[in-house]
Image (cartoon, rainbow, N blue to C red):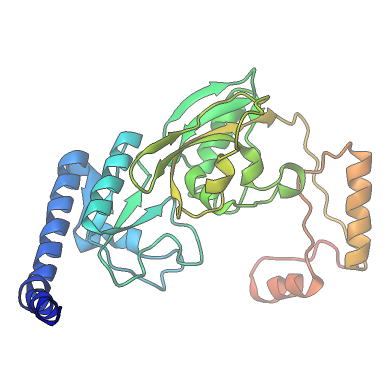
Length: 302
């Protein structure tokens, strides 16, 4: 037993260990070459200047390192990238609009990493106005989906400050809230079904716009809010609402937060629960704006 153990250790120290990093580097290079061939010239970026925006967080305070940026344009290409990176031991960071503020969409770990952006997967696959549903790809910008729904006389109710640049895939992966959460809920409430590439490269095809479906597990909720840790969302079937014909906006003053809550409840009751958004602005925040932002004025000086 002692001789066998010594031979084993000697083999590990003299043969496997020195060649380990070389073999790993070769596997990584082979994987990158295969990804390039799969995605084509426009589907892979590796020059530092070209990848900078994908490696930089929204606040521009942190810049990560990556082997490159994969830009697939189909679910099959996403699956192939995931398979190739997995086999080579390369980490991947899925990225939507890169509008997050917590460094979740840029590479921050000290390990070989590829950023996978869904920006080229930005097609609206279908809109069914009668069924109040649309099927969209993960790279669609939220504002574009709002406009596409409005063209059909429907409302896509997700609305948030970054809607002009954030994507539906990122919104689903972070379960974004937004301005109209009080009426329609978080993004989780807007999704009917999902298409997801799992960590081994297989595709969970759960796209369906059928509302009255009570069969089996509701697997979509595993991926909503999971921030890409269980799979990469590539497409979603999302619900639409009737497009409001009349909108009224009011700016009111209340003496306390308790009074604001009473006002909200009253507004919900009198409108048939049609309050889309309700935001409380503390007086000190308004005073800061009046003091430091030129051109602002107090609409309710009393």
